[in-house]
Structure formats: C-alpha cells, structure tokens
Image (cartoon, rainbow, N blue to C red):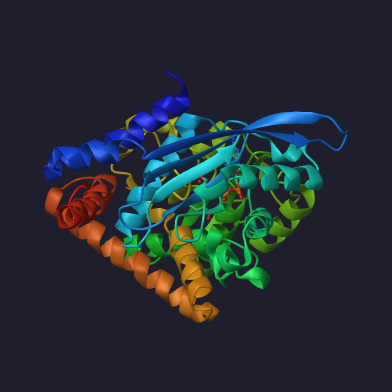
Length: 420
Ligand code: NAD
C-alpha cells in the first residue's frame, strides 16, 4: 500500500474508532467514511519556453452537512488522490470540532513550485481554478492556502474566479477563497492564525498541567507559514526555540535561535540552511533532541514506527496535518508523551479563514485584536471540550477530539434527517 493510501486508511480509522465508541448510526458512519465528491482535472499550461505541459489537479469534497466545503490547496510533488482524500477528511472533523459552519475539502496539484517561474505558477493557478469551474464558490466550496501555496496563490484564484463570472455573481464573491492578501479582502491575523492557534493550544495544555511555558524548549519542523508564525508565537509565550528544520536542512542552538533573524535569513536564502548563528543537525538528530515540545509543522508521516523510539520530547504539538502515524502515536501515548492532535492544534487557520469569510460577506472589517481574541477563545473552548471528553473516556486527546466532532455530526444528521 502506498504511503498516501495508508494515510487515508488512518484518517478513516480515527473516525471508525470514535464511531464505535459513540455507537454512530450505521448510515451516518457510511456517509462520513467516504468523500461526497472526488474531482480530477487535467489541464495544459504553457511554460516560459513556449511548450505545453499537462498537469493533474484534485479537489476532494468530503462532507458539507455543517456548511460549505472548506479546505486548502496544496502544491507539492507528492500530492496524489489518497493524500488529498485524507486531508479533506480531516477538514470535516476539524471544522466540526471547533464548531464552524463549514464542511471539509482539500485540493492540490502534483507540482514542485520551486521548479517553475512566477509567471508559470500564475498560469498553473489560473488554469487550475478555471478547470474547477462551478465546483468552487463562496457559498459552496472555499479553498485556502496550504503547503506550497500562499496569499498570492489565493489572489490569482480569486481574480480568475471573479473574471469567469457575470456582474451579478461577482457581488460578495471575494469570499470564494480565504487567506487572501489584506488589500483584496483578506483578514488581519489570517497569515499568523495557524501557528498562533497551535501556541494557544499549547498554552491551554500547560494550564492543564498547572505549569508555565516560560523557558520551555521547542524544536520545530517546517518553517513556512505555520512553522515560522508558530515560532514567533511560542517565543512570545516565553519559550526557547532551540531547533528548526525545513526542506533545506536543520539549524540548532541550545541558547535559543533568534527567530526574527532566522525568518529574514530563510526569506532571502529560501530556507533555514546556511543560517550562520547555529550548528547543523541531521534529521535523525533533530527528532532525537531532548526538548520539552516537538512541533512538526511540515508534512504528514514524519514521526513513524522508524523514528518514534528516538523521540525525547514530552509533548508533540501536531501543527502539520497527520505528522504522526497511528502506530507512532500509540507508542508515544504508551510512553507518556502528550500528543495534541492536528484537528485541534492547527485549527487556527480554518477558524480565521471563517472570520475572513464572514468579513467578506458582511463587508465589515475586524481589528487584529478582535480576530486574535476570538481565535484564542475558540481554540480554548475546543481544548476544554477535548480535555473533558478525555477525562470521561480516559482516552488519547486525538480520540477525544474525534468523539467531540463525530457527536456533533451525528446530532446534525439526526436533526436534519438523511435526504430524501
Ligand atoms: P508551507 O509550504 O508554507 O511550509 C512548509 C514547510 O515544510 C517549509 O518550510 C518546507 O521547507 C518544509 N518541509 C517540506 N518538506 C520537508 C521535509 N521533508 N523535512 C522538513 N521540512 C520540510 O506550508 P504550511 O502552510 O506552513 O503547512 C505546513 C503544514 O501545516 C501542512 O501539514 C499543512 O497541511 C498544515 N496546515 C497549514 C495551514 C495553513 O494555514 N497554512 C492550516 C492548517 C494546517
């Protein structure tokens, strides 16, 4: 079985375990077990050399019983259907856990953005968006940034969508994507939201321990949107970021890395490698660091049966989606390591995406302070409910989070009934 097929199987297994415990109605379980729609588009893009290349793009719409489909667009060479299925499934349960009126979706293109010029990437984004046609829209399915995509990608998607619609349909349609630049309808605080949300979840956890985060050490894998903003937020809470790893390498300093300087370096050098004020480590050495908190914020399946025994951290904060495999998570739990699950730890992104969508709908702007306090309250409310469930069930935080999400979805199906 391919690693992405395995990932999808694991995503479904989390749902199954919660469904078993809740005695989920069999039809509801069946509905939640498979994506509602799976779209594959093949489209040509002209390279700067003049030749045409075909790309394959995906949009998986897992479930929309709570509201419009919602989820990121990933541009990475390893993107395939099973990976996107798993990511779409997680979105449904993330939205349900944090009580947003959104469903779950995800999309992507198998492409390495580093190998294409800016103008080629713009053509890929525009042609992909056009190929999705009526399958996205502000009241139907709302993409956002993920790995390899950013605010600029969302600006091109929005512009393509608006230019493909008549004047009546364009009204209020900036909400077709979230994570846009502020100037064209983005929300203050959206860029920082996922990293900040992870920091709030960690602060809540330490509150449960009755401990302060001051002087606690953290190692962060991934230094893109989530990892870099997470580093800033954790530093603001008094933590010492002692190591950062990305696709270019790993940098480490026991006294703590200067995060502002590292961000400036990573922006100019396209990665953390070569940062002068630190030593370098191998990936294996990075995972084996004796730190209080390990925050994977890159890709899925980074902590696996192969390296889990080397982990010394006391807490694993899943800022990425699916960074810890099921087998590894079981071992960590048995060894007393607290794993804050992805659908809770990285929910800040979709929470502030929701605030952006609301602002687009109402044509009203929220202050950075309003966004931040609402984000914190929403994350902490979900943390409280997960902690309460866990005490009741004596289970892992991941299982408790799925119980919370499935319980809501079950109630909604009970109230609405299953059509027709
Ligand atoms: P990004 O593209 O901005 O950054 C990805 C980072 O991962 C980069 O620093 C890259 O160098 C690093 N990376 C890639 N391969 C690596 C490897 N093999 N080893 C070490 N580092 C590697 O992506 P992002 O938006 O920060 O997303 C990161 C994770 O967070 C993904 O799992 C994504 O699904 C999840 N997530 C993102 C958001 C969001 O708002 N962007 C929201 C929720 C969850």
